Image 1 (cartoon, rainbow, N blue to C red):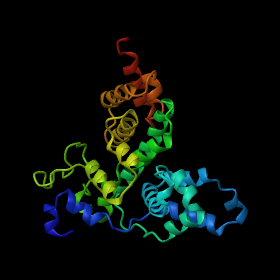
Image 2 (cartoon, helix red, strand yellow; image 1 turned 135 degrees about the vertical axis):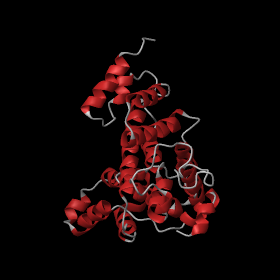
Image 3 (cartoon, rainbow, N blue to C red; image 1 turned 45 degrees about the horizontal axis):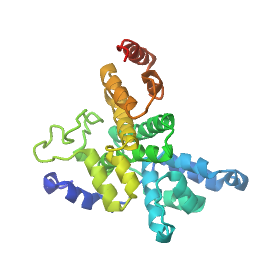
Image 4 (cartoon, rainbow, N blue to C red; image 1 turned 90 degrees about the vertical axis):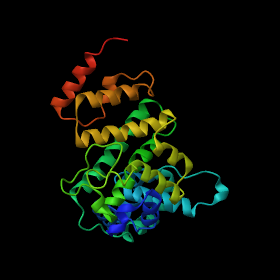
Length: 285
C-alpha cells in the first residue's frame, strides 16, 4: 500500500476497490470443479436451491453472481435480483461454474480474513433463522444482506491488508472507526459505510442496499443485528452484549421469546447456559 493511501477518504477507497477482481473461496472452487468433472447425473440432480446453498457459503461468490445477474438481466423484466436463488435461476450452473473458475485464487490470506469470512456466513445463518421466525416474505433476501455486510472489510483484507489489524488477525471491537491505533484521526468511516458505498457504486439492487444499511425497517434491522451478533460471537462473546442484541431483535420479531431467538447462536455450552440464565432472570413484562 502506498503512503498517500492513508490520507484517502471513503470515495477514494471505493474507486480503488470497486473494479478489483474479487476472488472466491478455495472450497467453492473445489466444489464446483468436482461437480463439473463428476458424473453428469450428479450435476443433473443438482437443484437451483443446491446451487444457491453453494453461493451462501461464499460471500465473494454471492456478490459476484448478484452483480452478474443484474448486469445480464433484461431491464424489461422489471424485477431486481435480490437473492442467490434468483441469480442462479438467471445464470444457471454453467455460468456459475465459469464465474468461479475465472475468479482469481486468494493468496497469502491473513487469519483475520478467514475470521471475517466465517463471520459473514454466521451472520447470514442467524439472519435467516430470525427472518423465518418473523415469517418474512423472503428470508433469503435478509440472509443475503447479512452475508454481504462485511464485504467492505473483506476487500480490504485482500487488497489493503495494512488497513486491518494483521498483527493479531482480528479487528478490535470498535463500531465507530476501523483504523485502530494506526491513524484514527485521519480515517473516519466504518467498514459498513464502505460496504454501503461499494454497493451503490456496483449498482446493487435498491432493496439489497437498504437491507445492508440495516436501519428503518424490521427486515433491515434483522440483517444488521445478525451481523452484530456474529461479530460479537466471533470476537468477544459476552452475555450482557448478546442479551442486549437479543432484546433489540425481540422488538422487530413480534411474539418471539428471547430464548427462542438465542437458539440460532452457535455458543459454547457454558456461555449458552449463562445467556439462558440471564434471560430467565429478567423481570416479567
